[in-house]
Image 1 (cartoon, one colour):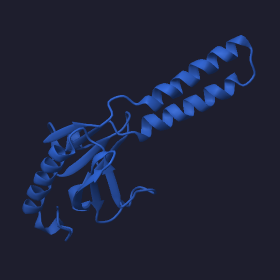
Image 2 (image 1 turned 180 degrees about the vertical axis):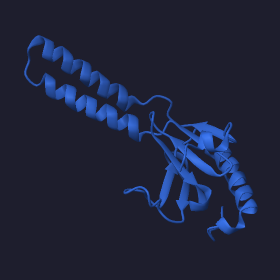
Image 3 (image 1 turned 90 degrees about the horizontal axis):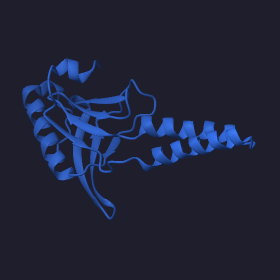
Image 4 (image 1 turned 90 degrees about the vertical axis):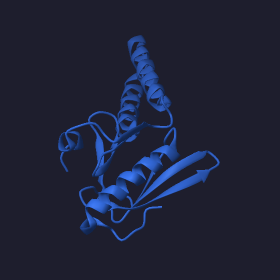
Length: 160
């Protein structure tokens, strides 16, 4: 699917940041890189390995950790580290669930089917938001509006 910002020609209906504002794993991985550079400069063996491992963990963390969630009139977009976006069209969403866990509330998005364009897509996506109830309400309203305007795209699942 094309870039939703260009496709919708405007601002998202609603946006929310990830629950944790600072990615501690990324900072720790970068600290390992700095330690590796220091050890290499001192001539200690193994410094190069620290650099490689630190960069690998930092890159994985940057690409795999969500930063922001956006609701557009026809899709949910999850922004990861630049340039990675995950676009979930509303026709692929079966329903939404609020999960109350000991570690905090989460929003679960159930897909009618995994997106065929991705090898490792799951049928459930857990969103960790600062205010999951507000995001749930906004996403549910946008999803219901989309289904009302596009009855042929309804998945048969009920939004909760």
